[in-house]
Length: 423
Image (cartoon, rainbow, N blue to C red; front, side, top):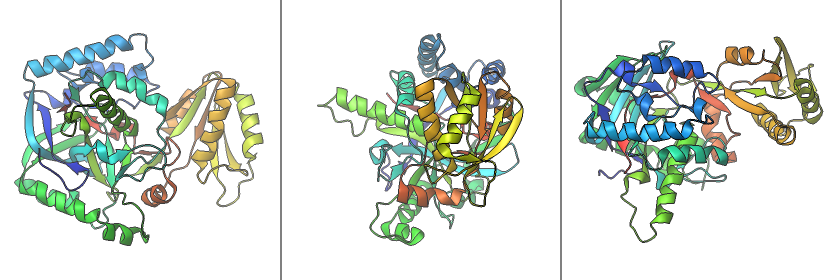
């Protein structure tokens, strides 16, 4: 295994061979959680050999059939390995270009992240850090999928703050000299994607550039701070998936106290790194849909708690309330957080604990409006967060409130393409 200077480095990457890649790849499992019809259609489009058979869409996490689905996933993984579906690229990275549904091109680099250098707990100062609060109860269901699985497929995206474009974009300049591994259209309005093999000296160049970017001197100059632990890798997408990988690895260490786990494949997780400064990278708010509640009571108590007003002044936190086809904008006179999403989420957490009901996190405003038409339902549309705020905020204040932002539209999330052995 090629040793890297930072938490990110080359991996032994698996790709399916002799497979229709447009029917292989499928979007991240944590998308369209309130739209099972999306996944039903994806299953119809997927091939006999498909990444969809190796993942559990979170729309089905609470399904009575989830245990069987998990067992079927492990069976499919073993079957694909036994049949030689994959070709393994040892000590490699994959440079990719994703053309999203809007036509913008996002550059990325797939490799593996060292979980020893990642800590998702509140107050963490690790080189790899969560950008949003991690919800502990969301990890156990995902652990069920990972335990005993011989493979991982990542939808994890990790951001680097590289304004001079010294890492990923440098590879892009020489892509014509790299071996192209795939080039295909993604299903269901997902755009298209190309992947190129990165090995040898090109990996060394990436490693040196990442080490320079993560040096104490560079870090302090970039943010105008002193004597603060370096943050080089900040979570963009898939925080709970990376947290699950971390918990699984820690679980293995606890179960094997006398065994050296330093080289175990589960110490690492496959991920894509992306430059925060990519023009194709846009932050969008993640909205809320609340169901099984008395919407009038919810709004009344929220008004009392947060001091809601329709007389909104400049710089006041505000959001849109949607219920039964009616939309109103409210300002918050008594915020409990520096961000609108923090004030709203803090109230909702307390209200739902006391009064019951369910909450889901939705990426598209149109979907929220549609779902909020249902009886005993309400939607909350939250404002976007500027991406330039991300690293400074996490460095100074720690993780943001959970589900603060999303990187682009649901269709443009990472798709499962590459895989890696974790056993």
